[in-house]
Each structure stands twice: as structure tokens, then as C-alpha cells.
Length: 216
Image (tube, rainbow, N blue to C red; front, side, top):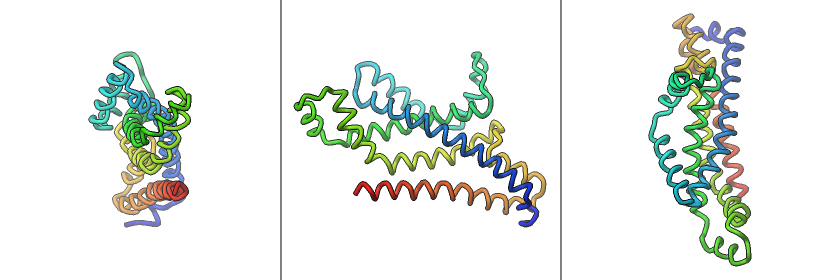
């Protein structure tokens, strides 16, 4: 194990470059999947005839597919129908599709956890269904959903490593390139990569605990 050679300034800079791509993909995906997850979760919660059922079928289909397959589809299959995405946007598109489906179930579960009595009280006070949902139900549900949503974001960050299959220049891709230069670099490089993932994910966990504590 050559720690000195593995942790040379050039290698550290190369890993950091890949890690920045990982974070960029993760945070863009988190932003859009959070928005779409809320929209889809609310639509399913409202049980709009036909529409809610359609979204339920789509969500259940996506949730039961491996993310790796969705990444392959966005990068290799979409160009066959005239929609070509580069590696960066293909990875984001796949993650947003998959994570939106996962988050929508968290949102729907959070909305269903709100006492129906509060909804009836809000409606009887003159609020419309949309106003009740926006001002009464959704704010309370979002507070309850913080821990599982953050857990899903942590999973999303780890899932970015799957983009190595389309050679996205993210952290794992750069780690593999460095490992290809010497077998003595494998353990030191993977230890450093593990620490980098851990540092970000543990920070997110601490944020989740802090938010959960404030709600008590």
C-alpha cells in the first residue's frame, strides 16, 4: 500500500475534481427530485380520478426498477428516439426520475399521517380544499417527513456512484482511473473515497437530527 504515492497533490486534486462533479450532480438532482416528489405525492394524496391512478402506476413501476437500468435507459436508449443527453445530464435525469418516485411515497405517507380531524376543522372554517392542503396539511407533513427525506437524499448522493457505468467523471470514476496506475493505490484511494462520502452523508445526518430535535 503506497499511501504517499496515492495521496500525491495531483491525485488529491483529481479526486477533488471528481468529488465536485458528484456533489453537483447530487444537489441538482436533490433540488428537482424534491420538487417533483412533492408534486407527485400531493397528486396521489388528492386522489384525482384517473390522474392519481396514472401517477400511482408510474411511481410503482419506477420504484421497482433498478436505478442502474434507468441510467442505461437515459444514456443509451433515449438517443434512439432522438433525445441525446450527455453523461452529466443523463445521470441527473435518471436520478431525478428515480428519486422523485421514492420521495413521492414519503410525501404521500406524510400527508396521510395528518389527522383527518384537522382537515375537517379547516374545511368547516371556510378554507377550500387547496387552501387546507397548502396551509394546514402540507406544512405539518413536511416537518414530519424531514428524517426520511434526508435519508433519501443521503441514498441519492451514494447512488451517484452508479454513474460510473456511463463514465461520468465523478468521484468513483476518478478513483478507478488512479487505481489503474498502480495496484498499491487501491486501498488508500478507496479509504479516502469512503471518507469523502462519509463526511458529506454524516453532515446531512446531523442536519436531519438537528431539524428533528427542533420540532420536539
